[in-house]
Image (cartoon, rainbow over the protein chains, first blue to last red):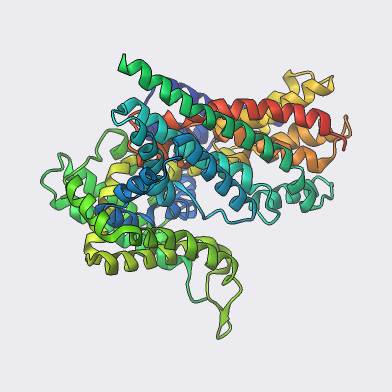
Length: 232
Length: 318
């Protein structure tokens, strides 16, 4: 059946790879990939536009999770939420950036494993609370914290949220991904208990926690070293 | 149902329309007309929704992409308060400031767990198909209400602050949305078949270790391309997992599926195509390097991916 597989749509992947490699504007890369893929799949332009449009409307639920919390978060920032988060962490003397993020990783991964994926998230947790606290904890020790380190701390805060979410949620039986896997396997004629899929995720979930927590533990030492070198 | 997801589409549409209006009147925005047009077009997507003919929506998406891609969405002036003013009100309000921020996850979790089956007059309280998003919407509105009461600010100020954040995100707001469209198009164009064909016809999987490695790396690699593990899973599990791992090496399908999906997630951590997890936070946290979050994640993702290969190799026939 080799001859019926159309390999031309792979060109769309090529556009993405080349576009990102050339550091072209991401939105333009995506739109170019849409056109190349569609034309390679032998769609005419009106069909392609209609396909894109239908998909654009259908997926409009996606940005809600980012955009709806912004009004409240923005207002709170105006009244000093970030400053408050930083001042609060400064009062806990044993708090370091790494330790704070390890605690957040544990909370994020465990709550996601119990299906509570809405605890956390970039717009409503990381931006207003976690990143400022992680930054504040470092600032208490190193008042002359460089911008470079601030950016690394913020990026690590966002990364910790992602790692906790990804490797936690798949251990929860009722999560969409588990249903997707079970449905797929059933269509292939394999009957699998969703509970088993969830349980066999646990070794990876634990491994991911250990690896990322270890990195966060070392992150404190990296910040200390960078500040020592900067002071010289 | 009483609280439908559609209501929040209208709320967001109205908000985007307000953002467009404020952009148009902002003389400090160097490209106020194209910025306003961009946000107004996005408002149409939410206000008109399914009433919009597919082809019109497609044209609209392309126009938005061109405006954003050629730098037509710019920043204005937002009347921010000084750091001293913010510190003063932080001292005055103290921990109360956390209330609205925590109300968002709290209401979302309550709605998605305890209230999801609640019915009033025979109708569900929350849209049963979109419980989490509908509860998130409620949580966000409740948070605005509490924040306004607490700070004595007007809801209009909340809209202005939303505009400040939306403007700073700029094109990063629509990138995940457009990538989702590309993902659907990839699926429709038969990308899965093409990739599975390439993988299975050019790599000889005659040892268990090679087969396991091809499966896990294939999951990660295809997720890097598609930006979504859910799109990669059926392709690689159908192309390698079921025929080779289960068919030839007698793998337990549950182990194969669980570790395969996690390998895909390792890919998600390493790709700009997963914009909502990797590019949007970089914009939200005002990082100059848009790939900074990915760079922070690679040193976790690669060891976990290798661990997955080892785990799947040893747990394969449990």
